[in-house]
Each structure stands twice: as C-alpha cells, then as structure tokens.
Image (cartoon, rainbow, N blue to C red; front, side, top):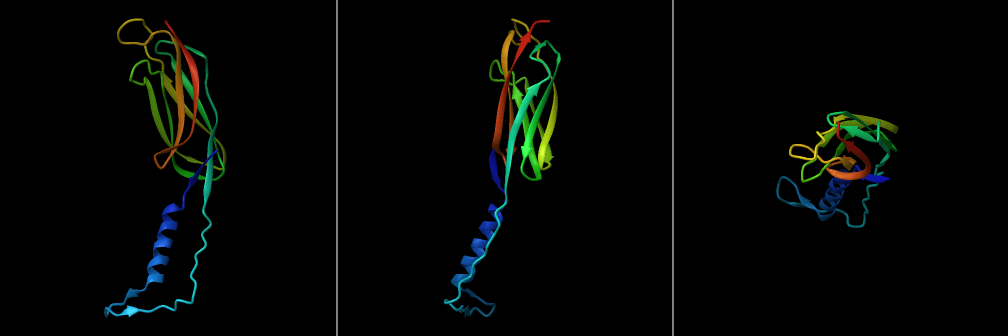
Amino acid sequence: MAKINLTSVALAAIVFSALLFASGCNDDSGEEIVRDESRTFSAQIAAESIEIDISDFSSDKEEYKSHEEIKLSVSVQSSEKAENIAVRVWGIRPRSYSYIDSTKAVSLEKGNNEILFDEKAPPCTSGCGGVNPGPYDIHAEILADGEIVSDSKITIDLARG
C-alpha cells in the first residue's frame, strides 16, 4: 500500500516557526527580543499517513466488439477517510492516443470503496479510424496531490463486430 503524508506542510510551518523563534526576532521598536537559550522548545506532531491501494481492478467481460460498452470497476482500499483523491482509467493505446482516458475525483471512506466507469470500445477495424483486433491494456491509477500512489492493469480483447 502507498502512504500519503498529509501533514508535511503543517510540519514545515512548525519547523520554520521554531527556527524563527529560537533565532530571536525584532519587536516593533526594532530592538532584538532576547530569548533564554537554556530553554528547549519542541513540538510534537502526530503525522497522519493514509494507506491507499487498488485491491481489485476488473472489467465486466474479457472481449468487446466495436462501440460496445466497457464497464470497469476499481476497488480501492483506504486505511482512513481521504478527500480529493483522483481515480483514473486509461488505455487501448495502439499508437500515441488512449481511446479510454477518464478521471473521477472521489472522497474515500475508510475500508473498501468501489469506483465505476462506463466507457465505450473504439471501432475495431483493420484500416483507418479504428484499432486492430487483439489484446489491449487498460490501466487504473490512484492519484493524491498529483502523484500516483497505486496502479493496476488489466488486458481485454477487441474483436470486429
């Protein structure tokens, strides 16, 4: 499972404040405020880490024909409640273009969460405007703060029809 550190900004702010406090500063009159150097200041923060992982990624079938609906299910396990998580599915990429590329912003509850996607198979031809029949990968990714924290891949078959 990937861990997401949600308190790094808060920790940086406290460290900066502690350094500023320990180094002394000026009051409004411009005179330096002297601090007792013998005192030790410490701040204890309970860094909150959330584990998020794709526990299952599946499609409703193994083979699809042209323009057929593809139902994708991404099961996400979360150790805690999490906000502003992106779930992305993409794939069927015969060249540099992904025929499937969808992202949903979700809030995860503690435990298992199921995110569903309804996509459409591209035209399956051997000529221009479609993809050749055969196996194609579809990927699922979980992103937090723009970083991929978990990913998975399935392979489906496209057939003429």
